[in-house]
Image (cartoon, rainbow, N blue to C red):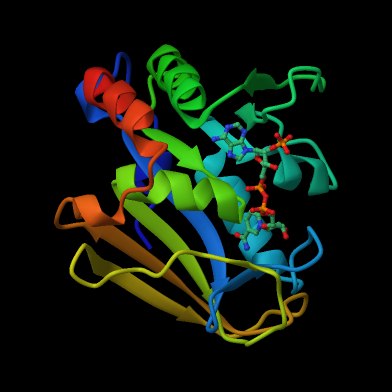
Length: 207
Ligand SMILES: NC(=O)c1ccc[n+]([C@@H]2O[C@H](COP(=O)([O-])OP(=O)(O)OC[C@H]3O[C@@H](n4cnc5c(N)ncnc54)[C@H](OP(=O)(O)O)[C@@H]3O)[C@@H](O)[C@H]2O)c1
């Protein structure tokens, strides 16, 4: 798949060229998680995640952040939580999606990169989807039980640019495909949730 979003922009990045990218591994039944963990083992996707996100700002929900088994070095990690007492080493804490986006945008400009990576979980994907420019989905060829889902990818809004199938590697529990979607139309207003207005205003002024 194209990794263009992972390439440095080469100096200063115009604010208008910073895109929001959702990065997720999604099973064929939409499942992305179970009991605050991933319901599969996919070392190939972990390597893909590291390569695509390295050097970028990441927006992540508090639950997913606390499920990580190792730190996300080389990236600015912005954790969204309503818990004012939340603290963790080497992260930026944001009290809303809009605040996280503003922090991520500033970080992208400082780093000279073109993308903000939204890396889950389900609550964060649902809030980010109406504003995203691109989806980098690892389509996992399995149907596991789970308690968290990725939002449906509406074919009238998203166009598949590339799809590359992979057999399961030695440390993968399933075969998978890397699928790259780009937005082809604005999200219908009816799809927006109430809390989106603050975010939309922030995004409108920031891009
Ligand atoms: N397959 C994949 O690619 C993938 C990627 C990421 C995660 N996951 C899976 O997804 C699951 C976790 O997803 P989840 O939906 O339960 O949790 P989540 O999205 O990671 O985090 C939810 C938390 O984020 C905070 N939050 C959400 N919206 C907020 C807002 N507007 N303002 C302030 N804080 C906000 C709240 O934290 P507080 O409660 O602290 O206020 C909320 O409890 C796990 O199973 C994980 O393994 C899968």
